[in-house]
Image 1: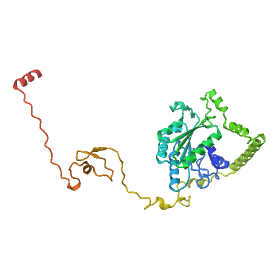
Image 2: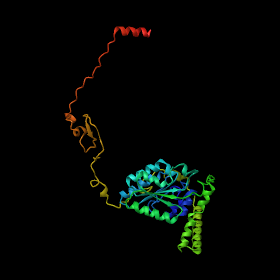
Image 3: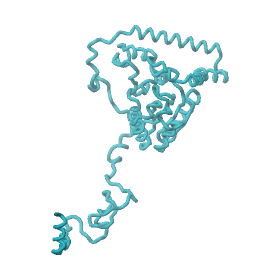
Image 4: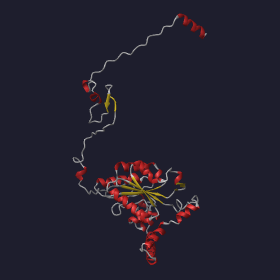
Length: 356
C-alpha cells in the first residue's frame, strides 16, 4: 500500500530513501521522479513497487504469488488495504481471483474506522470486515491492530498457512487513524469520545507496557533505544538534505524500459523448467463436465450438452437421425391454412348500416 511506510521500514528500507523520495532528490530510489513511496526492491528486499490506486495491488500481488508458485519458489505475497479501499470493485475482483487460484497470498485489511471523513458504518453494513472473506470461501482473522504481538503472531500463522497451500487469507486489523487523512485534514469530524478511547490505546505505549511486564525493557534500555533512533534519523535526514537535485536531462530517460540496459528481467527458476513445459505439462484441450444438464438437440430430442469429448447431441439422443454429411435435409411441412370465414349477406348489410 502506498502509505504503508512502516512496512517499508520493517522490510529494511533505509529512512534516507524515504526522505529523499519525498524531497525528489537524485539519490532516491526513483532518482527524484516520484514524490512518495512508489518504489520497490525485488532482488534484495523483495518489495514490489506499489500502485497508488487503492485496491489495485490485490490482483497484482495475486499474480506475483502465482508466479512464485509457478517458478517453484516458496514465497508468499502480502499487501495492505484500508476499510475504504475494501469497498472498491478491484478489491472484490482481486480477492475472488486469489481465492479461485488458491494463491499463496495474505491480505491485511487495516480497519481504522474512517475512510477520509466517512465512518466505516456509513459505507459497509458489516460489523467485521473480515466477513467479506466468506463470499470467496477463504479463511480470515480478526486481530487487535494496536496489539503488536497479536498482529505479529496472527500474520506469521497466516503466512505459514498460505505457504503450506491453504490459499489466500484475509486479516482484519482493527485500529484507529489518530490524525487526519493528510496534513490539510484536521479530522474535526471524529467524535472526541472516540478519539480519547483510541488515544489511550496507543500501540507503542501498549507494546512498551508488554515488554516491561515481560522484563524485556526497562527505563535505561528504553532511553538507549530512543537515543539510537534519534541519532540514526538525524544522520539519514542530513544525508537526504545534502543529496543533489536531479539534472534536467534526466526527465526524458526511463520513460520506457529499453531492455537489459534499463534493468535485467529474468525468471529465477527454483524447479526444473521441464515440469511446466511441454510435453510434461501438455493436456488435451477437451474436458468433461458431468451433470451439466441437457438441452434440445438439433434432432429435436433431449441431448447432453457437448464439450468436445462427449458425443454430439444428435448421436447421443438416439433418435435415429443422421449427423454430418449423411444427414439428409428434411422436407418442409406445409403450413396449415385456416379456412376462410364466410359472412352472410344480411350480416354484412347490417354492418355497413352501423358504420354509416
